[in-house]
Amino acid sequence: MGAKSKHETRVSMPADCRIADVGELHTQLKGALGSSQIVLDGAAVDRIDTAALQLLVVFQHEAKKRERHVQWAGASVPLYDAAGQLGLMEALALPAKKPA
Image (cartoon, rainbow, N blue to C red):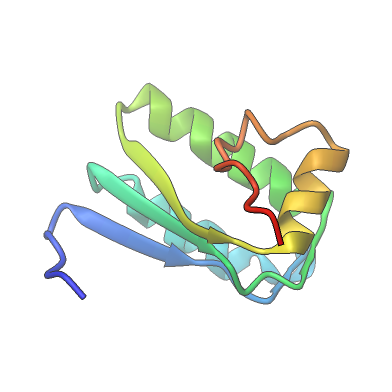
């Protein structure tokens, strides 16, 4: 594992990523906007709702506005499925889904 630059912030999304539980995620995302490099890890997401996806879309928009680089370290099948159903793959800048 390489050394982390002080300019990179990693945000790990919780397994249960629904409106009742996204307060902490919102706080982490808000704090991450201070970094030039932001890594989102959605590999652990088991459940996600529209509100959480909307939060991620707003975050992506804000990061782009501030010229922050956002990349995904991982995305779970439920995250892909939910984003796909709502047509948010591009808005979330999710990487192409790897074949099983």
